[in-house]
Length: 584
Image 1 (cartoon, rainbow, N blue to C red):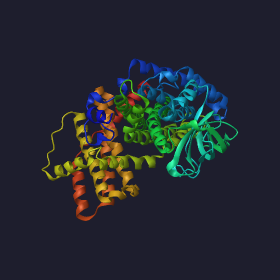
Image 2 (cartoon, rainbow, N blue to C red; image 1 turned 120 degrees about the vertical axis):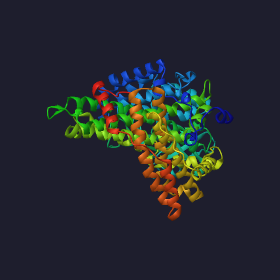
Image 3 (cartoon, helix red, strand yellow; image 1 turned 180 degrees about the horizontal axis):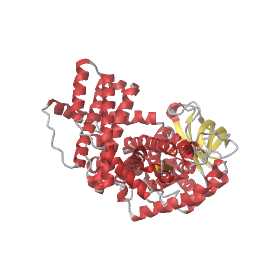
Image 4 (cartoon, rainbow, N blue to C red; image 1 turned 90 degrees about the vertical axis):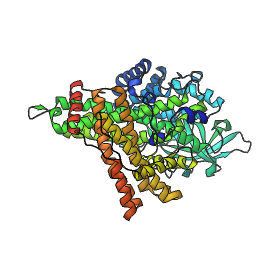
């Protein structure tokens, strides 16, 4: 498979140093009729079944949540990507992503759904024995049983391997006995089965995962009083000498880190889809209000300041949508047809960098969208009687879920650097070629059409990202992981590069005026951010003549002609006001 990856597919992270053929880029416009029908079915379920029940679930009517999980199972939504032999539909990851996007309209129930059908199920599917798969997966995908994922502890959040929960094998080797306490467990109060991570014999290198049914010795604690997603259950899970069969070990002793982190990769790109769905719902409600709210004798949607906000909300949502489907498209292309579960997991792992980018960029896009939603609603946005207040509270958790955005920012350049050192990603040779290019005479080709200018800017941004990452690797060597401020800035540059290229490719493929307008605005603004962030990063790594040389190279790489973003945003805002929904 590794040879196939190298020969036929763009590797994870390779977007930084290579061009992806337009025909190989998956966009939402490429969704099949079947996938669109799946999306429609999911949206109808959320709008008609879930949303009316959110007030009840906010008051902890968990029997309602269980009933909705069961109904989702009857529709096949819980097991869309699960093989048919275990009760699923056997669909591709793209179909699962469409479902996740629509579930993002469901507030806290979207969290319930994701915890159950993604991280609460996939450890068994990808790493469990055949016995575990046949025992548990059919009941989870039908909704008969509700699952939960138990990794975090009070003293180990981002440092998962710092967990204190232990597992001890009994003298007869027939059972493991688990003791400890997990924190912030979604579905905690009403789950039937938990995926629990623990250290066998308390040893870090024996960090492992187990399937643990609910019992008197594995029980939820009190419900957390949360800022948002109140319609989902969040509790501690208390394990007190909880005995489970030794066959409930997932994989082998010591596989816990591999299981946890690989499954989180799935959670990250699915989270990108879910928050995109939340963005679209927020836009619909905001445009409706802005069209109806009259000030000075006309709707506020006609004012320039509001047009700017509405357009930027749409642009950031379009960006989130573009990178989410580009990423899952690459995953599905690498998986191919008839792949076994090991190959599926390895394909997802290949795009861990892109999955982390999705998680950060999309969750922060939603934060922007709901913040502007509150602002456009004005005083009503601060009232619980209007939808903006709840959307604002519910959105905030997404920057913490699935690894905080800070941790993911460390992972993005860190994983790229590790692949470069191992020689699996030719970043070092690409950085050397860039050095040679910067020493040669400059040639600035004449611009063509509007997207040609954007393409030139994206090419320059990719080289800047390579320069920042290469300088960081050269400056800090093995100590790079300790330079979190520089890593964070490098990550921001890389995120903007991936987003800008994804939108450029999508706009080129679509050939539609609104797509072109959104791409031109985003690339223009991203180029300015990349330049400022790169300057900041380079100043942290160099000084004197070296810094002057690097900043001169930066200016040379980012000769970007400004575009009239005011006019382009007005065009987008007009489309929003007319169509009253997300316009792409």
